[in-house]
Length: 385
Image 1 (cartoon, rainbow, N blue to C red):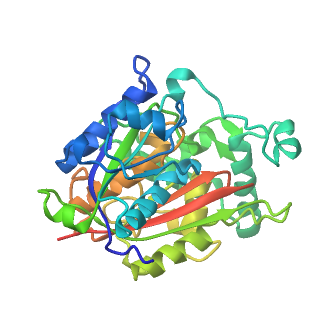
Image 2 (cartoon, rainbow, N blue to C red):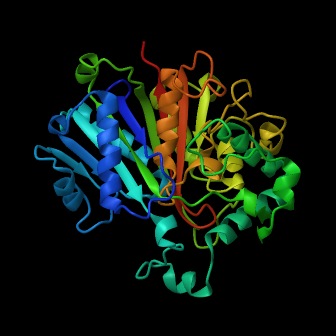
């Protein structure tokens, strides 16, 4: 089944707060869902599909009851970390195309900053006895990938720093961004080394918060007084260690990207705006290469000299400040990437970063660790007239 044109994103909402000590995760879910429905001009009673990776209680069952949805005909609880929400968009579009539902809400929320939670250790999985017992860290695993990319292609720390500089240049215009200060390459390189070669400013922020989107059928979209970007294509793929044979310089975007572009019927040259998962600067650089925006090994030059800075860089990326500066709620930044892409396609991004005549947007999520195992998902949206 091809989902091109089968569904549209009619409403989005990003929680404005980055530290929320006085509310529960369920309350945050309720606020972002209410915000997205209001943005679309719809009511709770209109919703017949719910997609959430919530781990509260009995997952989507608990959230369904808490949110007061009584007429659901479609429920999905796919969980692939930070890439979940690009998968959710594709799954919602497929469900709508199949007649399973007409109005689906996708919601996420979390409070890791308030709860001061570290990276969860998952026991009972096959790799646990071979990896977790040795104490790997998230930043350490991404540092492995960065170091190998440097070894293979001559990529430099200064080139990685350009990605943070672009994010901070955008974040200064976002009143809700956690980090609004514009930084220089030297400031990134002078920040403390966390795991060689990644400095502190190469790493994303940790925030409370969340977001939601409302995905609807074309028939519903026509009845709404709201610009609704159309879902053109979505691809997903799994990358894993292959029993030690993993290429640390590549991600599963090598597979997910072409699948999304083929379904959408466009190429990387058509993309006006990109929302690229930025858990670390190396995540962005490898993903840009793997999606075909430049050749493998040429990412360092591609991101340098303002290449990612809106509105006139050759690939304006993460114009809200991204996970490096703005928001990485519940350590899963995929949802807010979609929200900013919708803003760009509607022409509602901040004037300083709005892409002129933005027609096509790509959003890519990475869930897991690119050095071991992860899920990549690529989503392509188009502006509707």
